[in-house]
Length: 319
Image (cartoon, rainbow, N blue to C red; front, side, top):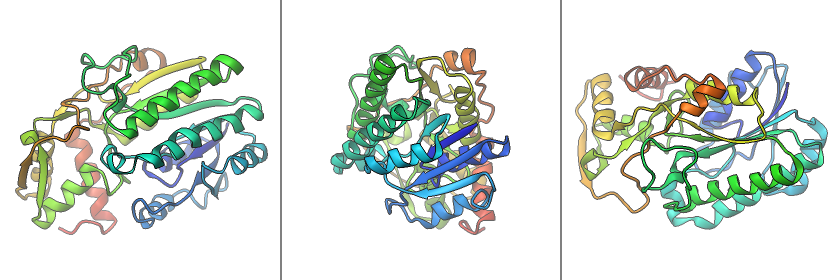
């Protein structure tokens, strides 16, 4: 299969690309190598795939509609795995405009390019944060998801709705995958698992909201990739699936696991949760289990152990 992967130098995009190449697919990766976090991490992510004979990397920006069309015409993808985005709920609180430009308009540019080359199956990486704070747990895909708490989830929900129109008008197969708190090797340095691990190892203070009572459905990267590939191979018109672990963990317990693995005690500062933070994220994964044979296997203790070992192997964490 010919797959166009956007955000291919990022955390999830690079791991998906590696898995697709390993099974024999041809991958064109797209990334704009922005400086939201240091690009050295993106180059590290590409080390195990950049020289693969079936991988081609293009430096391009979703906001360039003409370039998106050129790429789709040249590569003629059978599927588009759209993972590139401006991420982070908290960053979006202070920089909302870029989320409209990249996540909404950029996605429209990509989907319109796809439409013009024959409507390949488009898989959209969305987020469990679209559910906000008033959705019954576990979060079902049928929930309205119409009260996002920040620009990031709002932009992702808008992306989902625009995608529905492409399916309705032009029968473009679209699968929306709502990711829940992804972590593991190659994780981004701006995400909590990385930040907490580095701070605890260095004896620096970490911040826990509401005394660590917030619960998150931490989902290991390999499980996310397995779910993504299951969806890639199962176009079903327009569908939305949660990809989570289905097992929320209190942040205090998550931090405790890091303490155990590092052999160090965390210095914790307790502050009230900002308005962008729901008390819990909790995926109902029954639909993904049924349709995609999705079966998350890695729980937090094992996943954090693998993540910290990866940090050490890459010289990012001493001791």
